[in-house]
Structure formats: structure tokens, C-alpha cells
Length: 145
Image 1 (cartoon, rainbow, N blue to C red):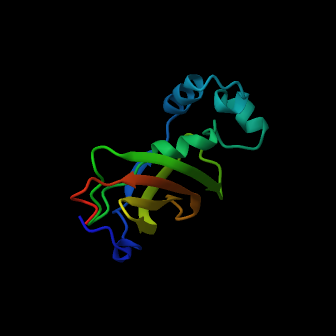
Image 2: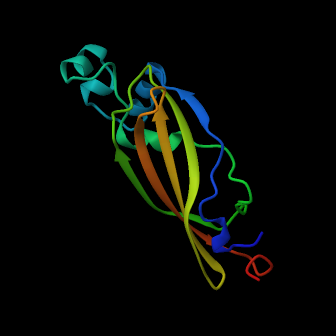
């Protein structure tokens, strides 16, 4: 594939997720978190949430569909950086639509710096979060041309 700035702005089709309590609890347990609103609906409501909430990094599990023209290699990818910006809490019972777009792309020799921006909207079309992921891709000699 050609790693050119022409890829910037290309987006995936939306992918829908239903956020359920069990998944949120399992994720929180796997991180050994103890904040009660991650597990207990009553504790979450006492903090002003509708139901239990997702930890900030949970959004990384909500992947989007394929981006047309983007073919990531099987090896040589480093996840260099991750940022999350929340407009609303991600709460059990939410349905969110996730889209990923190529936000930036720079090629330096045989290395590509790829930034993906993932945006999630709820069923009321309100933005829930934006995340940005920087991937550092080392190309093989054939791909670097």
C-alpha cells in the first residue's frame, strides 16, 4: 500500500455497540479497580450517573470498522500514544456508534506515524468520546518504497 497523506480524512463505516453492565464490570475487575460506580448501580446513581460507568480506558475496546485503503502490516506496529476526551460518561445501557478516521499520517524513511481518531456518538447523536491513537509502523523494504 502507498503511505501518503491522501489517506488523511478517510473514515470507517459506523459500528454500533450496546454497553452492558457485565462487560463493564469484567473490564474493571481485570484492571483491579475498586471505584464503586464501576460496579454498583446504586453507587453510580449516588454520584449522578444513570448506571454503572466505564473506566476511561474502556473506550479503547470499542473498535471501528475497516478504513477504506488502510492496510496495516501484520508486524512492526508500536502503539505509541493514546488520548481520551470524554464529553459524556460511557454508561451501562448506552448504545454508541463508533467511527475511526485517519487524522494524521507522516512517513519518515521506512517509518510511518499514523494517528487514528475514533469518535463515538450515542443514540441521541451526542458525542460521547473522542480518542486519538498514535501508531508507529516500521515498514519492510518493499513497503517503504
